[in-house]
View 1: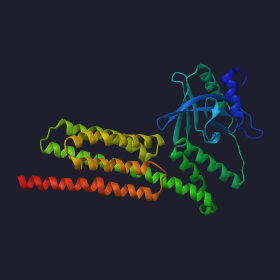
View 2 (view 1 turned 120 degrees about the vertical axis):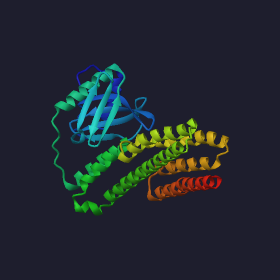
View 3 (view 1 turned 30 degrees about the horizontal axis):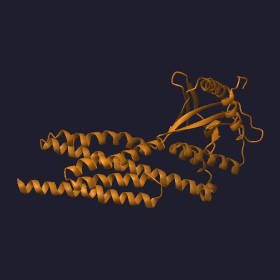
View 4 (view 1 turned 135 degrees about the horizontal axis):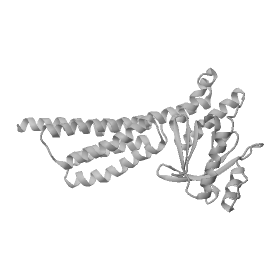
Length: 321
């Protein structure tokens, strides 16, 4: 790190050096921001022989838990000077850090070049040390919002039968399993809503209903739900859960204004039930009780009422005909 340091550089290096273990040396560093769940979070990034450190900070002071990505888990580290982004690919996911200031960009490029020149660490660990290292890495991926990579990391412990009865491993496995179930159930709610929208649009076409408002009310959410639902099912990033939550929150006043102004109370209840089920399953701490509660709200308040309204509509049309 022979490059001249200004006051911001010096402050970043000093804060990063407080996170080093005995004998560990900071090889390179930079600073940038990552957008997670609609909020941009600033990190100091430090490279050592063994790991990449992500230290969240605010006004130069540490503002959260230090996240370490072990270098053997970094599949690629790339710098895009044109876009000012540092892309870190690890296993199942990719993390992107945006870097705006020129001196941080220079340091980012130096960090990437150095990382690609350094040999991969060859670490021989005892069983307990290896288990602890894997758990810490899985939790780091989870803290960054990448559930797929967290699950892939913890699955490295499965070949060892002793880990199957380890309380800490069981706890983490259960936590990740509950979260994966929750996001996939949320994706399922959206997929079912898409299917119903397609069926209703088909019925409108068969009945020669050319009401543009009805078509728009079904088509726009369907397109949004496809994109969010696919990424939720894949578990791409926790940020997609936030998009699903935002979609649910905004839908309640949107449909409330449209349906209640026209006296369509049942339609409003149906859409509110869909939104409530998404909010229940994708907010708070994921657990089976919350998931099954969301399934109940969805099954009765949304799916059940949709089926009843369709049956009532067909009976009404038959009697009128």
